[in-house]
Image (cartoon, rainbow, N blue to C red):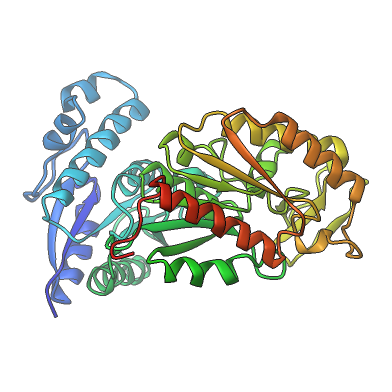
Length: 414
């Protein structure tokens, strides 16, 4: 087994024993370690590979400036910026294979920036006293960040926290050894959807696109999936997107915590990535199922999907607001955009005869949506439902035409 190198990051002035324990476990399993100190006030008792002065300088500042700030939040942001830049550069130089960051709230704040700065596929572990806490906003979590609760580890080593730290050390080293980095040989298509009970177009589309020489990644549009999709779009990872479940945008504008953020439906467009878009399941807003239903939704039809997630059905005015939000986001696109509008429904449960069918509401939405679209957006009406074969066939027809014209770069050998 090829040895892998793990970057161990933390405040070596106050957490040197814990960080040394992490490093010893990694080395004991045959791995290698590089160390990075992100403390401000004190000095580490042992030498490190990257000093706090290296970190601050990488962020365009200095330890002296961090101390002079007289504010711990400002000082730690200097260190967070420097750590993210330094870790990114050192990784690009091939000097480590995975990263583990240890901390309380201050260290976790910094760790989130470090993980966000590293590419998808680099093992990223945060050992934190606030892992899984509502203190951590979803929008700051890199798509493949792993978190482990630092139980009993606020101050000093003990048998409780050693159990957490040793598992974390083994996890990051094991991940570095086992990871299969993304293969960029095939151009990547990003697709959004929900489960097959609601949306099924990915079943015919994925093999059809793979047969054309493309890789297809389908993102579960329940907040975190959309954040990962948007993050990769922002990195220019996609050759084209099939963004056919934009429900998270409706969640966001109507105040749900199950949100992919205010930038949903913008990053591909800003990068000029060709977009095929359909407002799948636009008529639903998902809510946290174990919390009381907010008063604003009283009187709305709702469905408990499971103990985690409840969906409410939008009224006509709320649907029009969703249509307008789509137009505002797509107006920012600098690349080609084709919108597909199935006239018979946009989710399995709104078919004629289904429980959530609302012909008047659907008509109002479709009219508002089409009327609000910017001039550069091509709108394709489809005489069918989003789960009918004609929808996937139309999407493939548009995609093939784009490939033929060079709008989408063809796969190698195709």
